[in-house]
Length: 272
Length: 148
Image 1 (cartoon, rainbow over the protein chains, first blue to last red):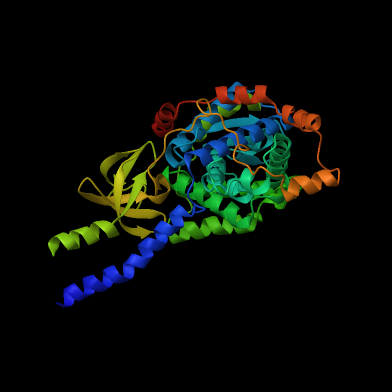
Image 2 (cartoon, chains in turn green, blue):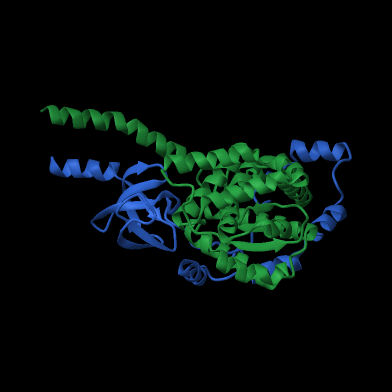
């Protein structure tokens, strides 16, 4: 009898929760993305990536591109969004930085590549950028949606004529570039992406400490600090966060491989 | 009564999906723990409990742990391609000019069609094509990655 009452009360109180969930879905939950939304993200990302490539040329070093693509595709296969095709490239730039563009486009600058000393650091950097794409940091900031969505950027902001659309596309692209080079994704988003690096490194038995060393080195370069501080939290905060995760999971600071041998094989070709 | 109980249990049981191309169901929440079973992309896992960065799950009648980063709440989707469907973000846009476009035009801030066209064309499509050609198959890359 008591059990029957418990079951009855459970059903009675759980029904409003389920109905609320249903209502949320039909009203377009901001966290639900349709195939059309994803296609819009890819289309926007392609345009933004080609703009990026008009600003920074691709590195001519084929070995470099092959290595970054091999590591990138492996990480995309494990932690990436299955519906996206990921593309990776090394671009020529004096800034030591890496960039993630919606739709699966990841760029690493030649100067950042030269700062690395092992594979663990490269894995950390690429996983960080995949983290930004996984969390849809730019997509959410700019509200990029497909044509079927009630929340589409196009339907919520512009009129139907082509010129208005082009204007909006231009504004959105400029805003996207401003996020990459001036405003950044925000400190919380950067730590979220660092968490993706942490879990990728730990799950593949790589040394998290090496990623921390790279972060420390990047922020010690006074010229580069100006660039990084505009868009990222201070190194101290990022390293502190990684150490906190290591302590929580009881992982020793010496844990993990660096794959220096494989790294050297690919890197010697362009260091000389 | 049993049927009702099973129905309620199935309603409550949360499911997650393995999104990594391949991976392992582990005995403990540690990367180097013993392997209970091999997993592949799309495998449905019943969630038992959560621990920082890890999920305790049931799969194929076996209990074990998977790294949370390798799972997703929704089934992994197929690769999205722009080849088969034309994406037109403006198709369903409102038919009247928005506040944004009309006020911009009134103030003379709206760039001309030619100007916008020029900016759009300044995108380096050739380099993008080259970047896409660098792409390596995920399965092939993962095999190479796990070799070391």
